[in-house]
Image 1 (cartoon, rainbow, N blue to C red):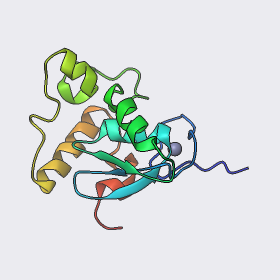
Image 2 (cartoon, protein in one colour; image 1 turned 135 degrees about the horizontal axis):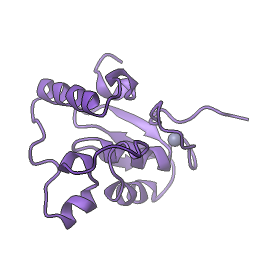
Image 3 (tube, rainbow, N blue to C red; image 1 turned 180 degrees about the vertical axis):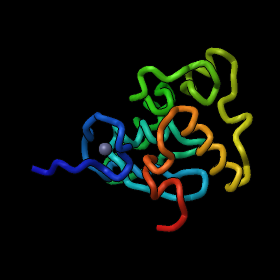
Image 4 (cartoon, rainbow, N blue to C red; image 1 turned 30 degrees about the vertical axis):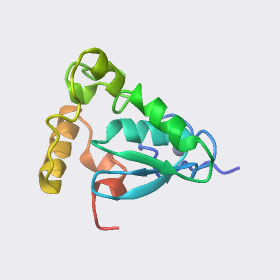
Length: 139
Ligand SMILES: [Zn+2]
């Protein structure tokens, strides 16, 4: 039995993959792409600034992942995380509160990296626990 999870699964996320591990491709703002199952694709997309879902091996998966990510809070396995700032809430929750989650997102890759590290510190998780291929360009 294959017990490994897809490359989009965060080390701290306890949930299993759902469906093929390359059902969808998640692309971050810097253009880094990783194959993902539908569960972890939605979680990762919900946790990225300006990420997107592209078709993988499963027809319709990218659409389902996009829809699921819309209502998923960033880093959803952090059950005790503060959920008050736009960056801590799902896109759907921000729309309901009339907030723009990406309004203050850095446009410069270096600033984005610094912001992500700062947020990792705020969430009290190690930046290197992010899927490393998504947060660095040294693949
Ligand atoms: Zn997965």
